[in-house]
Amino acid sequence: MQSEERLTRVRTIADYQFGKGSGKELFPEGATFQLSRTKRVRQVFHSGKRITTARAKDGFFTLSMKGAAVLHGYLPGKRLRVVVCEDAAPFVAKGKTAFAKHVVSLDPELRAGDEVLVTDENDRLLATGQLLLSPEEVLALEGGPAVDVRVGIESKKAE
Image (cartoon, rainbow, N blue to C red; front, side, top):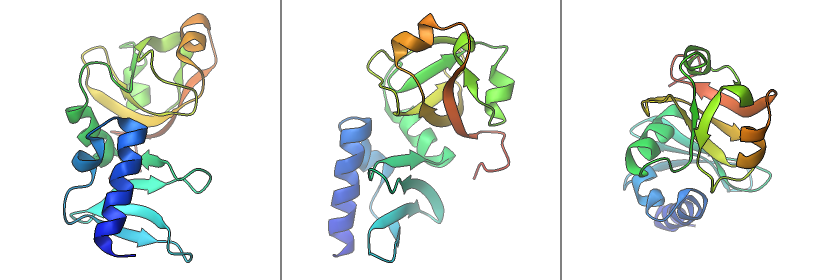
C-alpha cells in the first residue's frame, strides 16, 4: 500500500471518529507512518511528532497532546469536550483521572469509549483520554471516574 493510500485511509477513519474534515486537519500532507509487522498503521507522525496511535482492538485512534491540540483548535464549540471544574483542572493537566463529580459539562453526542478532549471552563485544553461512561451517567453520578486521562499538558508523557 502506498503512502497516499495510507493517508487517505487514516483521514477517513479520523473523519468518522472525530467528525468531517478532522482527517485533513490531523494528518496534513507529509504525515509519516509507523507500521506493525502485519503492515497496519500503528502510529502517525508529522514533523517528527506523534499525532495519533491506532488502537489494535478496533483501529480507532488515540490522541497525543499534539493531535488533541490540533482537534481542539479545529472543532467548534463543545464538540468532543469534557469540561472539568477549576478545582480539578491542575490534577487533570498532570495526567490524573477526571472524576464524574468534577465534570461541569460535556458534549451530549459522546459515547462511552470515545476519545475526548478534557478542558477547563475557559476551554483551555488540559488533557486527552477515553470517556468511560455515557454523558447521562457522568452528569448523574456523584463519584467514580469519568475520563481515563491518557496524557495531560503537564504530565511527563506530554510530547
